[in-house]
Length: 125
Image (cartoon, rainbow, N blue to C red; front, side, top):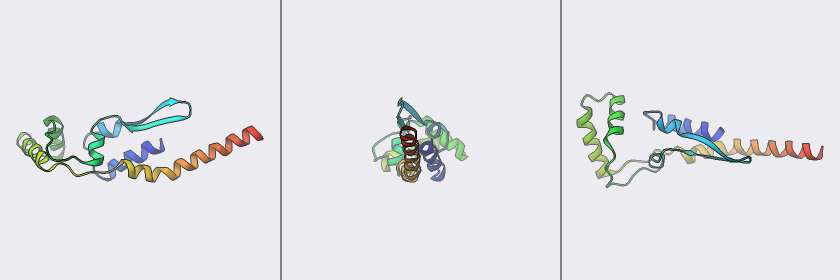
């Protein structure tokens, strides 16, 4: 949960969320007793983190949602303009994942070390 919380906080801090879809898609899975997989479960999380190159037309519906929340007066017209801008220029990265990992790593190391010490005490008394 430490990494999940840090990644979600990173999204909030760099203003990368409009709807909570990406935020809520970050959770851990438990493939085995000792493992946790943590990642955004929506494909566009990668593009928020790394940005996009020119030459891609994004779907209009998410752009319209973004513009509606941002208070656009001409949602349809602005969505088409924004789509063309993204096609021509791409999008800038809004890193949240690796910075969250850097913040979470010391905490995660402490958690692991504490459990190792606990396990050794349990085994060797």
